[in-house]
Length: 166
Image (cartoon, rainbow, N blue to C red; front, side, top):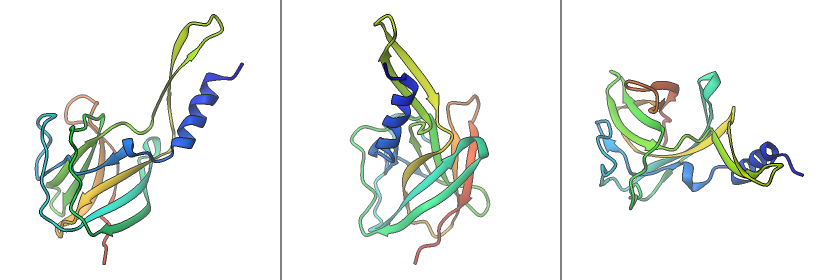
């Protein structure tokens, strides 16, 4: 019989950085999301596409790749309700852009137990990858990930400098 935890971890490793962890144009420039129907329309012809490695326990973000995309931010047909929130901050700490995404470190699976009954397995990955699509904002200085499921305004997971792209 296979170990359910091993199967769950292997499934996550195979999934890698799936579209589910991709943050697209569901954010709102300059304000916190107020409802699940909040969307934005980007008139900019470019946006920033980044893949970042997240280590929630170490409060660390590492850019794995970043590039400009010659298209506006894609629009989501159904707004994402997530446990995490990505924020782009200006030099004064003001939020310039924010968008929600699912908790990419949460590993969930259901497997039959020794008695044949389905059992839920919930694990936390120590390292995960997230794809972020962010608007190109000249005043942006910082990208911050926040655990929005925490009480209050949320708890900061990690932050990094906003990439300067040519």
